[in-house]
Length: 446
Image 1 (spheres, rainbow, N blue to C red):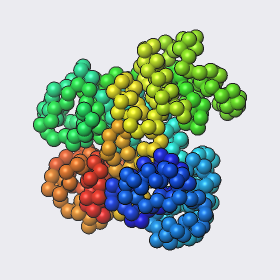
Image 2: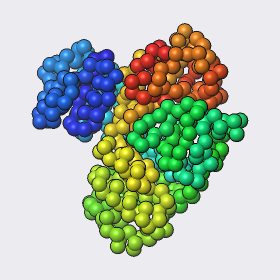
Image 3: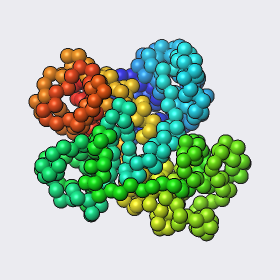
Image 4: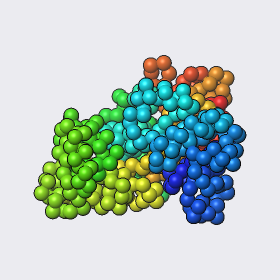
């Protein structure tokens, strides 16, 4: 696939590197000449310095041969104009990153579609939704729902008190004959393992699990996790992620929102009805104590500064806060942050990639999640009639190394996948994939 990415920094570059690893032809348009020189010296990506809203620049990037145009600069007006021009100049499909939630209303989306924008992604809105989800299911580090929550992906950290520690998957299955969940990956010492029956769980494993709704209670019991009742939270940062999360949560949870910018505080006070907005720096430990941080159940740091978010979450942990969530934009920090005690890391680059990568696959992709802290994806694929995935039971399929089928949704029922499961045309199938296996999995469903 020929893909043109319009970016102005790290989001576009991250997408380019990820898609290039899946054997697509990538061209980057970016106004930053120095950044593009660095990219050219370290990768085989084609680069063009310039403004993506310039017709001449788009033509020089062979827009008429482009299968997918992705515009992810920070300015949403530029993204919208780039996508509209790109479609008029011959791009087959266009995606624009937007910042305003009003652009995602059904009425507005229809208008943009008529202008040539096939899809829009708002990372801040998705991040706020993830925060809301995590405060409702506090045991998990990461959650992603498939097929109207008929199947869900949970990331859990196994502490030493977990009943599954030092047991193999086969042992666990024998002792619990009616499991409604399945481990699809283990992240251990910086490496990701696709588990087999004789693999053991050990302390501090990060475990990815596909579960049915009725399997959640048993899953938490076996992982030794207790639910935390969230009544009081502190949020640091009144940007788009912070304000959207507060708006979604303020009717059910007591919220204190810290923001250092006075003008922004006044705007937030008008926008939020039941959130206490505090003008102050959350790095000030005395201020946190004055605002009763010891009585807080969850602490969420979503400023534009990753270091501030990490630091304030660590302060909160010292004061005994049970759940911490940090927005960390530097991907290299994710693994470290999880290892030093921050429960959940949210990254807008991965959020954007999760939305966009599905458009590069030949199979019908219902949803896709790029995972934090591990180079892997979980994909919900629709099995096409006569595709290879429908030809045999799972145990007899040529599922590539680095991939594991976790669950199946058919009609109104969901199933945890086992060796004897038979996938049928129209089934939605949840598959855990390491990068090298994605193209082979795509072929199975195509």
